[in-house]
View 1 (cartoon, rainbow, N blue to C red):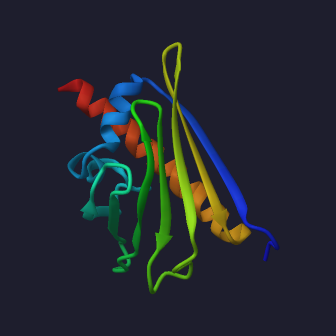
View 2: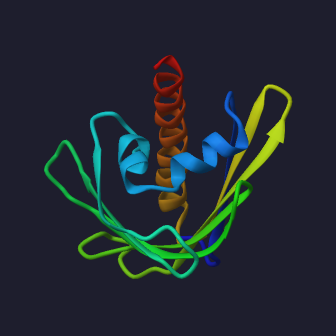
Length: 152
């Protein structure tokens, strides 16, 4: 086990404007359409109050029947560039009650927006790998969601 908490950074340039990307985070209906690491995992918003100091609680339905829940508070929202939120898995998750923080930055670039996810407070190397894979998968689902939205 690692002695200190591990920071994780995941980045991807997505072919969409800052505004479009930010808007996809701003409602429960939008988030539950794509905020999952895998298309076989669904997500339900039990609570989603998208404003500073607002709370969120998301429940995932895993193919093996588990239903992990993550919850937190939106600490900072700066449209269309930044979202900062606490990130705490709930029981019976192995990381239950470990306080973490996730920052989403949306940086304008030629040809799209770079999405930078900075996940702080991960307690182990294994948890870091699991979260890295989860964020990479989530960004893949996000790109697919945006592509469908543009096709409408």
